Length: 356
Image (tube, rainbow, N blue to C red; front, side, top):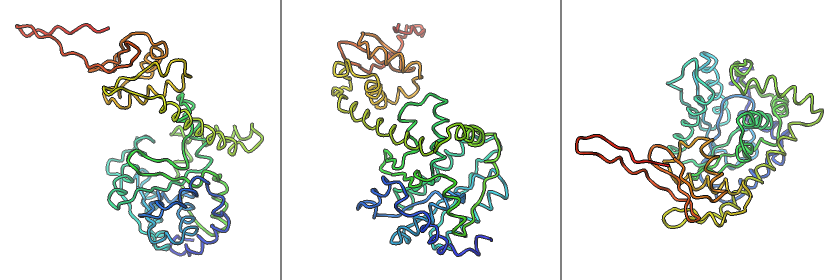
């Protein structure tokens, strides 16, 4: 049945009966129950797929007092021709049926060889611009348990720690005051699809998900089915629990390192307070110190590991942070030092200063 012929309010009501409010992530439910959540609009990232459609319908049904302040955001990547335009038209029809405000944009810089990272950056760039334009600080996203598994396998391949492996989070507070919410992390994709079918809902399928061009697709199509068969149990539920525990551990380590992070007025870090502490705590304190210095943004993983080893040992040394600065350890403190400019002789020749 075409989207414009579906009674979307009825569909939302039936889906809400199948996927009750209590089945959504408790951290998101707790957030939605506090006073700040009642201010301003709620924006939903709406692709037209099963997950984002279910999210929009459940928000509409479970929070009826928020319906007038719901906003759907659709980004047309323009990578699948008529299919991409069909997604955009579908999303518009669903929002019209629900009476939800709808905004869309098209990727002007789209190209056939676009990577997952490029497409994601363009999509979230649109979300951020539109959120600012409409005065919204809340973005709802439709990630579910299958996404947790895919993300964790992808990040394991590149050697992520607890912070990276704890993604995607149910409640992610951004540095600028925005918040990303993912209430469906307690549900599997199969549960969501079954709920939509029983409610009489239709959704859009992205044909590129059936290919193996992207790393996430290869994990979804090859790795996860074999892993779930080998596990012989609810592997998705297990990895979702692991994600929760990793998030708890990451938060505890961040809090511990923050308690020990005492830079002087000039920004030098007192390493004596970190002496003898677990490496995970020292690592986070060092990350915090480096984040305050934009000049260190290009420090490589190997460079960070070398600096971390020196900080643990507390030995006096100097590490390059790039073309313009050093990290210097002396007298029990980690200090930031700018490179001195080269000396210039009368005839104009430059003699670079020696660095350790």
